[in-house]
Amino acid sequence: MPTQAKVDRVAELREKLENCSIVISTGCSGIGVNQMVSLRRRMREGGVEFIVIKNNLLNLAADGANVPQLKEVVAGQTAIALGYDDAVTIAKAVSDAANADGTLQIHGAVIGDGPAMAPAEVSRLASLPPQPVLLAQLLGNMQGPLYGLATALNATIASLAYVLQARMDQMQPEDAQPEEVQAEDAQPEDAQPEEVQAEDAQPEDAQPEEVQAEEVQPEAVAADE
Image (cartoon, rainbow, N blue to C red; front, top):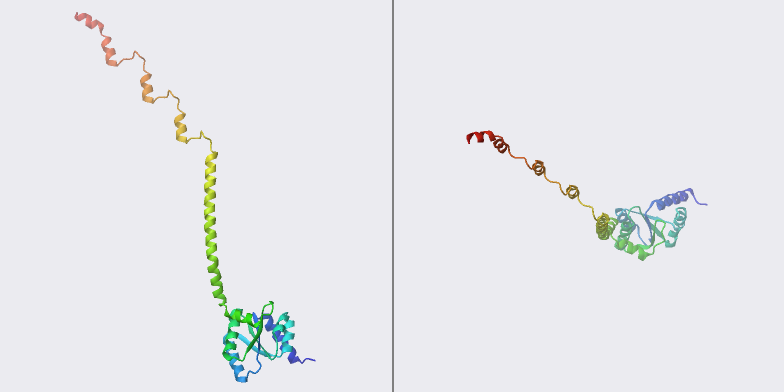
């Protein structure tokens, strides 16, 4: 029957497995005390929690945290590296620590609820750029196509507007004329300026006042004779 200490240990480890972003299983057989202290210090500097654990307790914790695939990469004397930030950064920290010491072997890893990763996959993960760099590269690759799409959409909208305007012009009546032209055409053909009409309104026998005055003095002319 398991002791209370083991039950508490499994519960604590299960909680860590549920909250971590990546767990890396390593083999720590043959590592001395001083080397283990050095490994833990380097891991801690890289944001990694490094725990030596018995395999049976680790398997119970893996089942309790719903990551049974972790048991596929557990073998021999085991120490697990737990990371709570970017999985790439954690994998790089563990890989650098293993390469610096030369005695730590990486057996595999699990990210979230994904499948178990082989040692070669962990090495490839560690060789990737950090997450901020990957996001910057992704955004840079997306900007080119998005700019081209925006340009194509603008050109399409402009072409559509041109076609619609041309169609609207075609739909106007052929005899449609501007207002100024229509106003001029509305005048009758015999319309004349006011000054001309005033002159035409005078009777044909109308004469200037001076001429009329001369004609009304016939008696004066007869007296002289």
